[in-house]
Length: 158
Picture 1: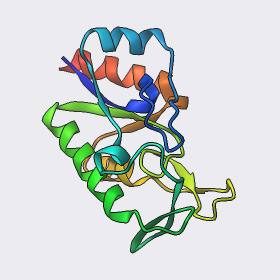
Picture 2 (picture 1 turned 120 degrees about the vertical axis):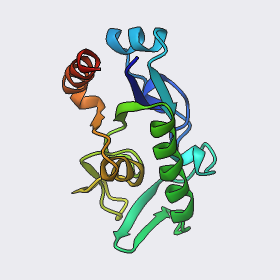
Picture 3 (picture 1 turned 90 degrees about the vertical axis):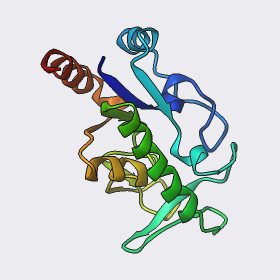
């Protein structure tokens, strides 16, 4: 059975930095969840960060530096969470991932630029980047049609 790694907040887990979720109420996701096809992950909590927590943004990518709005370095937690997310995807033989857009961990195309001003930059979050580098396609909640098509094609080919 084809499995998909999914950001826990998109399935209703209250793990966002502000203690809220980003529940995606979609019939296909509900069906996949009932079929046991979704593997939930929150890289930030896996990495040891509490909920709620101060917002964090990537200050630099080479070398990687992620700080909270208070200036605390949370890079080790983000890197640990990214490694654990990759391990989960491999362990469950996931075909791809559905992750929260713009998250410093999960954003697949863009993340906030580190200024805490709402400005975006084109770059993946830490966990999404780790998955992408290791061959896992990563979709966000704005790309559900592409994700569903990908998973259906993958399921037929398997």
